[in-house]
Image (tube, rainbow, N blue to C red; front, side, top):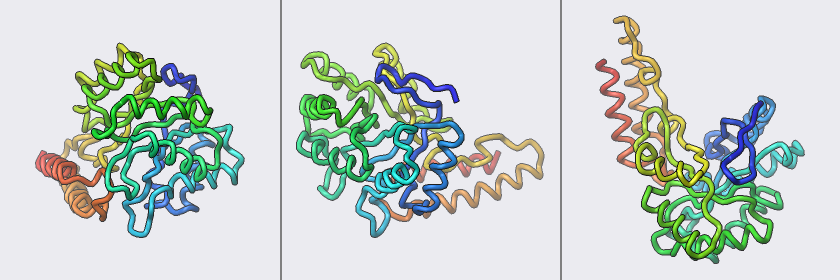
Length: 277
């Protein structure tokens, strides 16, 4: 599998990244191991997770995905075969998104323990934290980089203004900048990246690693290919009706960050329009 350089991070990854938010949620340990085996056997190497995966599941505390990935790497002796991407900043019980320096230091150590590794290949700030200055957050990342506990840093879910501010602070304070941007981007939902955010990332030579390749895990056949015959349209309508029912109840817990009223409403609305097409 031909690998591509991830911006200026020094990392090289295959063109598809495996999202690990299902590990410890809809995929138990055995299924997760099987998925990881198949992924690596196919020639891919980048695995994305976060400390908060999958805290939204009743009975989970967060860290379940990292723990499974760490146990898989130890079982398969696969550390040298994979690039590990994880994130910090989600609410892990402290009641807010948190990118303060003390929290990042504490969270990084916890992720390293769960993953059973000495260094995280790519560490992302998961969400904007309006209560913490960029200088403090980037300074915390700098300490991890200098200590060899993190190899590269990036950010997820920033808008264009937040990205500009973070890059400006890094330059003004001589701090490490975010070298990877992880925006939501797929064939259905492109607005968050197309336009100012994407335009701002490219001149700065930021690597972009999109999340949510399918909107919320759903990619109905009616989006992938519009039916042409009456029979095909009727079948697609049936599938879309079923999809809308699934969306209404998935995920069951509102603790899952993608389970927002706005996202559910948009997907249901799109399902209705395609059913009528």
